[in-house]
Amino acid sequence: MSKEAALNLAREKELDLIEISPLAQPPVARIMSFDKYRYQQGKKEKNQRVKQKGGELKQVQISVGEARHDLEHKAQKIEEFFEAGNIVEILLVLKGRQKANKDWAKYKLSEFLKILPEHQVLLQPRFGGKGFSLQISKPAHP
Image (tube, rainbow, N blue to C red; front, top):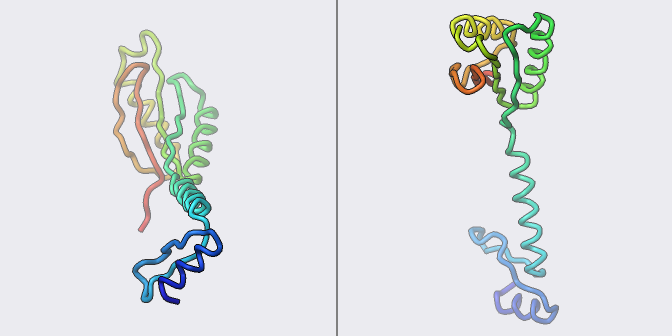
C-alpha cells in the first residue's frame, strides 16, 4: 500500500500511521493509536529491564564466635542466592576488642570461605566500620 493511501485510511479511522520497522524493504507501518503504541512499547521495555536485572546484592552477616552448624546454614543460604543469580556480600562483624585482632578475624573469614560452595571473589576482604566485608559470586563457566 502506498504511503498516501495508508495515511488516508488512518485519517478515516481517526488513528495514527506508525512506522514499526523502518529498515525493512518495504518499510512496515501500522494503523493504530499512538498512545496505545507508546504504552505497549513502555511495557515491553519494562519487562526487558525486569528480566535483565539478575545480579542483585544480598548480604550475609557472620560473627567470629558463631558455631560451625550456623555457618553451614548460612553457606546453604548463600548457595540459594547463587542459584537465583545474586552477588553475595559477606560481612564479618567484629565487636569491641575483637577489632584489635584483625589477623584472627581474617583467619575466621577464610575458614568460612572453605565451607562455601564453589565461588569467585569479586572484592577482596577489606576492613571497615563493623568489621571485614567481601563480595563473592557464582563462578562463570564458559
